[in-house]
Length: 516
Ligand code: FAD
Ligand code: DLZ
Image (tube, rainbow, N blue to C red; front, side, top):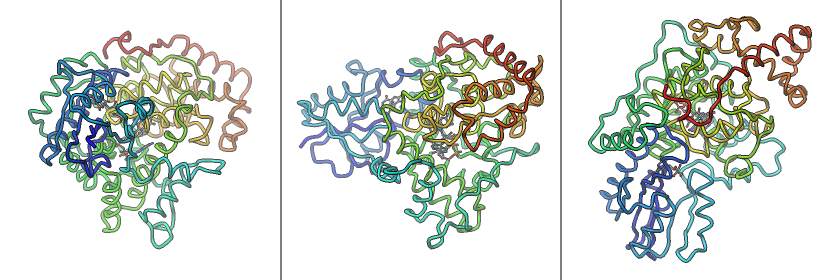
C-alpha cells in the first residue's frame, strides 16, 4: 500500500503508531490550515506554538529519512481544511489510503470516521501515547455508579507501580492534598521559566502569526513556549530541579504578580507530544525516590497527570458527543465582556485575564477558582465558556478543556465529574491570594458599595440551585448557614447580586469587546 500518513499539530512524537513501520511509498503530511486557526479565535501564542513545533518536527522527520510533505499556511494551493488538504495531497502523491491517529477533538474524529469507507479510505489508528486508551476507561467505568477520579487514579497507580511500595501507596496514603493548600508567603518569589532561543523557523512563524492572527485576543511578545523536544526537555529539567519540591505546598496558591508560581507549564508540550506523560511522571517519581522532593509534591504532581489528565480524556471520548450539550444548571448567560478586555474592578479576575493575555497561560486554580468560579456565579452558558477556554490557553485542546470547563467548573454534566460545584465566595480568594489587598472591594462585606461582588453572587447561586444542590451531603453545612440567615439579609444579598449582574456587560464575541 501507499498511504498518506497525516500527522496533526498535536501529534508531534516520532514514535507515533502511524510512523512506526511505514511502507516504502508512504508520504508523511503535516498541514497548516486556516480552518484550524480560526474555528475559535485561538491566542496568537497558541497558534505560533503549534505551527513552530510542526515545522521543527517536519524537519526532524526528514532528518530521520521520512518522505515529508509540509503544507504551509500561505501555500497557494493549500485547501485550508485538514480533511480537504489531506485528500488533496493523497491524490497528488497517488496514495491509496490516508492513515491518521485519533485526533484530540471529536469534530475531527467524526469527520474522519465519515470517510472510512470512501473511495480514498481513511484508516484510523489508536493514539497510544497515553497511559490508558478510551477502551481502558470504558472498561473501568462499566457498571460503576459513580466515576470518581480517586478510584480511577488508584487503579492507575497500581497498574503502573508509580509511587507504590509493594501493593501499598508510598507513604501509606494515596492523597496528600491536605498538605497542599498553603497560600504564598509574602517574601517568596518563584524562579523564572526558561527562555528559549528563537531560531529562524520560530521567528518566521511568529511573523506569520502576527500577520494572519494578530487581531486575536492575546499578545505574542512574551512567547517562551518550547517548540522542539529538546526545548521541552529543558522545561522538564527546570521544573524537576527548581519547582517540583514546592509544587505541592503552593499548588492552590494564587498571586497578584506571579503568573506561574511552582507550576510546571508542561501541559502544552505534553499535549503536543513533545514530552510523554510517562517520562514526566517517572522523572518526578525519581526525585522522591532519591530524596530530592517531598512526597506531597510528587504525589500531587503525578495525580494531575496519571490521574486527572487520563481521567478527563477517558470521560471525553466515552461521553462525546452528548457530553458537550450538558447544561445541568440551566446556565444561559453570555460571557462577561471583560473576559476579553480585562476591564473589571474585580482585581482577581482582571489579573487572571491580563496574565492569560500576556502568557496564553493561567494556572489551574486561576482557571478553576477565578475565571471559572466567576463564570459559574454569573450563569455563563457552557458553550460560551468552553469556547473561551479553548481559545485562550496554549495547552487547550478539546479532550482536556471540555471536561474541565463543562464538568469541573460549571457542573453542567450533572455531577459526573465532580461531586459538587467548586463555587466560592470572596473569602476563598482572600484566603488563597493577595489580590484582595489590591482590590477596591472588601472580601469581608456581602452588601454595600464596597462589598466584594463574589459574596452576594455566591449566596445567590446557592439559593438559585437549592433544589439541585441542597441535598448534596457535601453542601449540607453551607445550606445550613443560608437557612439561618434572616429574610431581610437574604433579600439584600439577592438584590446586590442581581444589580451586579444587570450591570455586567456581556459579549462572547471577542472582536466586539475591543482590545485589552
Ligand atoms: P501543572 O499545575 O504543573 O500540572 C501538571 C500537569 O498535570 C499539567 O501539565 C497537565 O498536563 C496535568 N493536569 C493538571 N490538572 C489537570 C486537569 N484538571 N486536567 C487534565 N490535566 C491536568 N489542561 C490542559 O492541558 N488543556 C486545557 O485545555 C485545559 N483547560 C482547562 C480548563 C479549565 C476550566 C480548568 C479548570 C482546567 C483546565 N486544564 C487544562 C487543566 C489544568 O488547569 C492545566 O493542565 C494546567 O493549568 C496547565 O498548567 P501546568 O502545565 O503548569 O500544570
Ligand atoms: C490548534 C491548531 C492550529 C491553530 N492549527 C493547526 C494546523 O494548522 N494544523 C494542525 O494539524 N493542527 C492545528 N491545530 C490543532 C488542531 O486544531 C487540533 O486540535 C488537533 O489537530 C486535534 O488533534
